[in-house]
Image (cartoon, rainbow, N blue to C red; front, side, top):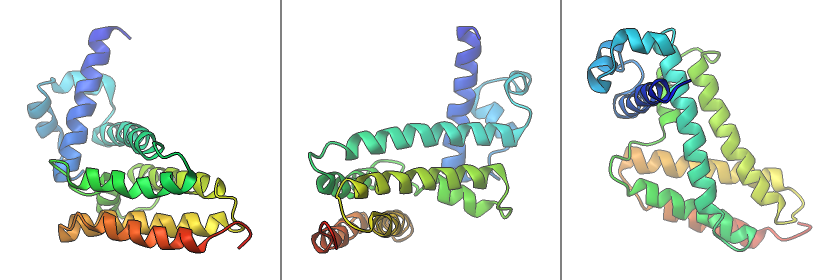
Length: 191
């Protein structure tokens, strides 16, 4: 692929991601994508078969970028406990950022009824990566049931995201962090 082709594809995906995050998948029509991106319809169809392919590719790229950011920022702690608690600090910084509209994967999964739809599968993959990261950190604690802790952390993460967006409460991350801290204090090796 030459640089122009790559730049066109990137522009399409960047615009699609912004439109999906702002308005949802159903509101991101090809006409709006053409108008907003400035890329001709013919050029879009050179890269993607249809709107669903554009949406899937845009969400896949968002997943990769978001997970990289989230892990990099959360991993700044020295211990597994600090990294676990950092997850909530990182979420709060996201909640307070301009344009925060909740989780793109929760939002888009809610728009699609079919659990086998590619968009739902991408959302599921994203959430599995988040759970896997929580499990990775939980295993590092050397506790007896790291899977159970990871699942509880996942519920706290998702609850904080949803509460922050729906209720407009950025402190949801602080409250979830406090609960996680209590869980960590109760979890000790061998318990």
